[in-house]
Image (cartoon, rainbow, N blue to C red):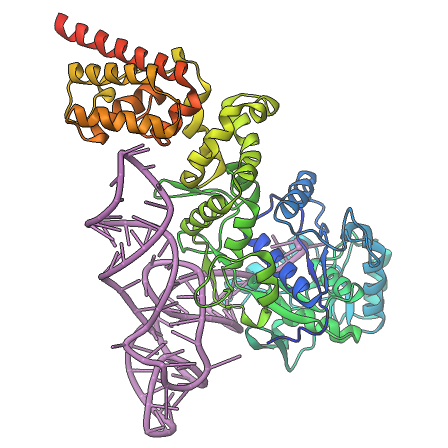
Length: 510
RNA sequence: GCCCCUAUCGUCUAGAGGACUAGGACUCAGGCCUUUCAAGCCUGCGACAGGGGUUCGAAUCCCCUUAGGGGCACCA
């Protein structure tokens, strides 16, 4: 159990270098859940101190993705807050001030090593079989040497003067104590020569200034946690609680999930949130799915609402071991959410996808009575919203656009072309006369006809399915007929009869 | 190479020394239902990495081994 009585301040601190990644989102979800659980704040901070890698497009991608998932931040870009600015590149002066404070107190120093010099140093270390790391060569130079280098105008960075002896113990909320020899902290760079801070300085200064109580981040940060602890100590600040979340593994189980799409056994997996938006995953399903990786609601239930998760979430219950995302479960969960939706809601959510895939304007679709009839028919058959088009496209075509390139598909089970034509003609007569033209009347009439013809329903019905939709797999038959209406249904059946006759004639000629 | 983290079915997980013949979910296989496809229902396959301790008793605590993962930048 974590102390849930005190409101926590947690931050999600991505760097805007690419598209929003599922691994990042899982961290953001845990941040959000913990903030809500404790009645605290969820803060968004942009870590854009690497000017070379900054990608302006990714800001939009990030905020869109977070909002899609319902992870609205309480403080941060676009919404402001009392601890701003929340974009690190706008906080340059703050970091410079704190770096100077560290230099003044003897906890940091300027280093004048060039990139080439450092590269050579590492090469030599590796050649000697030593582990590569800065050898502190500028830590103990004399004041005269320092003055000389400054006078020459040599560019410099600010490095942390790490303790040379002893050990540092970082307590991680889900992993316990992590102990590291201070000697292994090799005076990392705090301020780069361009005047920007490195992650290490910026994160410590900002987490302190923004009064962050719990630092949630990926386990790839474990190795720098002792450095951060040491920095908090050097400033004389109290460190926040560290929580290193398990990394998300590649679906293949090999290594961290990559930052690009991967193909495994012919299936494509994307690590980017926007791809799931596009495919028609529901944000609430995605949220539910991701929440179950590294944390669990209880021993039995895997489907739960956001509020239920907020009520139970506790960082102390997070599982420390790395996990691959179980994508087959995502499909299942999404299907569950779709099935549980109010049909009117589903219809509204389907409109943008159908509009895109069918080439019909959203306004036109929304007003089309066929859509309302179709949605309940496909609701339990949908795994993702983007599948809808292929399931209902036939309804939006004209009878001429339904073609039968392979007329044999029209054939009922164990029926030849002549028998199938007879079936279709029987059905056509029923379709012309049945009253009312609704599901029950149609089913009754067709079942009676199948009986009379001494055919199994499946074998009698299937020619109509293909005639009407052009496909062997479709939504339920009679409901589909009702959506089309009597005239359109009849026209398609007649076209199918004609297609079969033509194919019989062709076969005779040969 | 060095440092650190982790280890339960194929995958995601439950498990806080006795409630474990190790539970759930997804996937897969079989069956039922059925106008196709789904959905639903039932059944099945399937795991405590290995070895030492501690203890009356270990999936659970300790150690070693092994395996997997992360890190060793003027990137985050």
